[in-house]
Length: 153
Image 1 (cartoon, rainbow, N blue to C red):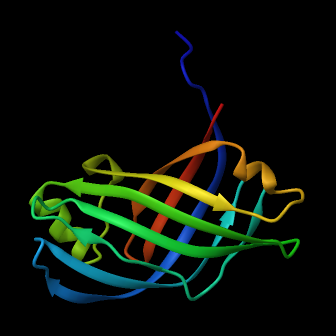
Image 2 (image 1 turned 45 degrees about the horizontal axis):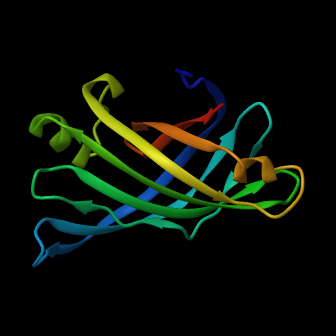
C-alpha cells in the first residue's frame, strides 16, 4: 500500500470580523457569518496578503461541531489572485469551544480543526495549487485563524 506523504505549502493568517448570528435553524443548529478583514500568507513558493471581503459561514451543528465553509481571495506578491474555498470542521469540549467563542487563546492541542481547501488560480507560476490535494491544520487565535496547508504528494 502506498502511504501518502505531506509537504508544507504555506500558512494563511486570517483576521476575522465580528460573528453575526442568524440564529437557530429549522434543520437544527445555528448559522453564523464572519467577514474576513484581511491577513497574510507565506510558504516556500508563495507569499502575499489575504484580501478583505471574503467570509466564513459556519453551521454549528446540534452536536457542537463547527462545519465551516469559508471563501476568500489571496493576492500573491506578484499580483496573482488565488481563490480559496475552505471546508472543514472544528470541535472540542464544551469548555474549550466556549473559550474560543469568547476569542480567548486556546492551545491547538485542545481541539480539532482541519480543512479541505480547494484553490482556483489562473494559468501561470501558481497553478500547481490546482493539481494537488491539500489538507489544512488550523489554529484558532483571538484575532482569527492560522491555517497551515500541506500538499498531499
